Length: 322
Image (cartoon, rainbow, N blue to C red; front, side, top):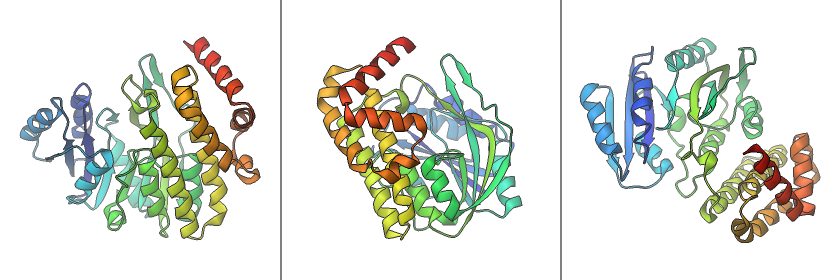
């Protein structure tokens, strides 16, 4: 068995068939597909079982609801493949994704192979128009690449890993924002090689139920802050002090994103803005400020000095967009 493909499943019955079809239609055939029904209250469990009857490469695990990290960890405890990949149950992948990821990994003698994303919205596809290229990084460089998110970030689902990298790594089950990035960072503290291929082979769907469009909740906010704090502690623990400012910049960008989520909601602003601004100011220092892009710098300054003005500006921008 070459590859184990892990799909955590929860309340995605509307999208699940297409996801499974796209995996079974891979040009790379030597894999097992592990579908983890994470106590889904809809028909997802039945859908998984029906697919397992049609293809003997499918393994279904039914468990009590514990969240996406719990589902992935359960699958990681049961993989048989030499390599492991992850797909979200409301997304699809291009037919050649795992063939290209695998070939690039083998040809480069790497331990992680990465491709790009294609973002699909209700109005159409956001194409990656840049020239297709292949780049190779050692793990020390890849750490900063992942934290900056350019040219690739810490997502699990656009990567193929040597399974042995997860022998001592599992996902944090007490957070659900950036939990994948934390796992990738832990792996990258090992001396390994990463090959990046810029072709968009993973189809990420931005639909009304996706995390991208979700409203801000206290659980989301606290989880984001906790994850960023864990990243900070991790780079300090591994004596990578030079990366602290990059982590702080990522924390600031996360806080700016949460402020944007509540820009048009007065009630949410009352509940969350004070905490978010406090966290943003805590990490806004000269070194982290230099790590921000120009627009983020401007946003961070306005948000920290005059939060009400920032929220008003963002609310107006969102209103014009709609």
